[in-house]
Image (cartoon, rainbow, N blue to C red; front, top):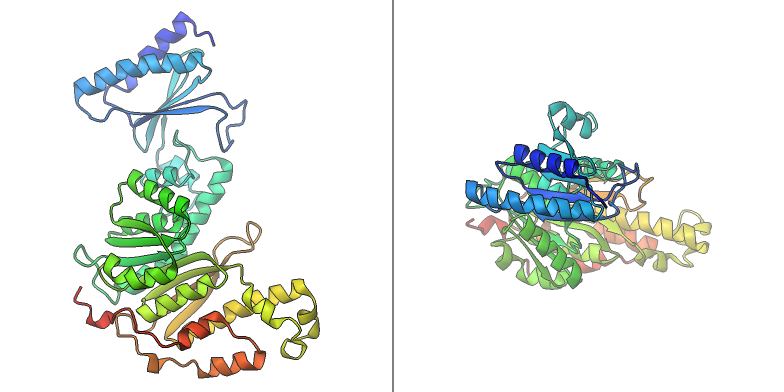
Amino acid sequence: MHITKAARARLRRALRRNLAEGWQRAVFAAPLGGREDADEPADERIVAGPASADVEVVAAALADLEATALEEARAGRVKQTFVIDARRSVVIDARHGKARVRELDDAAIHKRMGGKDRLLRPDRSAELLRVIGIMNADGTISTKRARKYKQVNHLIELCRPTWEHLKSHQAIGEGRPLRVLDLACGNATLSFLLAEALRLEGLPLRLHGVDVREPLIARARARAEALELPQLSFAVGTIAAAARSVVDVLGGPPDLVLALHACDTATDEALDLAIRAGAGAILAAPCCQRELAAQLEGADLRVPTPAIARHGLLRRAHGEVLTDALRVEALAACGYDTTTLEFVASEHTAKNLLIRALRRRPGQPVERERWRLGPLLERCRALAVRPTLLALLERDGSDMGAPGDDPG
């Protein structure tokens, strides 16, 4: 693309006038053809800002940036945004060199947050929002991603009672951070959201995530490095392996166990680990609850109506609800107060159930003799089902440490 001499001069003047004290990154993008809310620019390049605020370093970087900006403009990337900080950026259309300063003032922030006060504000949590893919590199949030932004803030508020419950029973500080275990963590989005929320709340954190999928763990590690979060670690492994290593990795039993979308009976493994570890709080979002649907096939006399057993779609739906209902009852029998919540609107996904469990006696040793599984076992026998969680809780096995004896 041809850039006129006058446009080049205006571009240089705009850069020198606005970026003399440094910038975080430059974003060069092709025009979107009026699609300002597109989720991905058609063509984009991101260049990091100077590594130092030293005057000479910034001056040298600015000279290089001028050349880069012209080169990118000739390549068609004429929509150029120079992010100064979380609130300020300079937007230049290189076709004519005109610049405007875009400032995210309190009114703009309030509007971007949908008119509500949210914990993860676009100014103070910009790096997190950018790394997890909600905020664009140029600091904007598209219409589609704005929905996701509201969803993650809603999810964090659903998590708030867990850390408030834990800190009311345990002195959390630098010497004794909140210990969190994320099982079947996947991309670990909730781990990063929680880390940011606790940072804003002033609560130190030590978090470990586990998943069997190596590419997802590699991505989670890269995100932690990008966000400079050494207190977050991730490992490839099974839930069973995590049960053996969690005390060493976290420096003690977990205070909070996360299990979002651990598939089918993996949720049961996660709940069993959390209960045996004496976790003070649990957040689980089950999915793919297939186990009981298979057990209910042909069980005409043990379902509310025979049609449930005879029709696969009805049987699967009934099996999903029954599975989670029995999980809630098992948690209650093991000393937890449970709440079931919708954490994503049902029109976005059917996998929107969140089980939040708070231990009634957090910090106390796990005492299996206090569990009250008998009535639940009788109910399962009457229903002719055998959920994995109950089978796991019934087996013998040593607990992973007594939280009450933990000196930390």
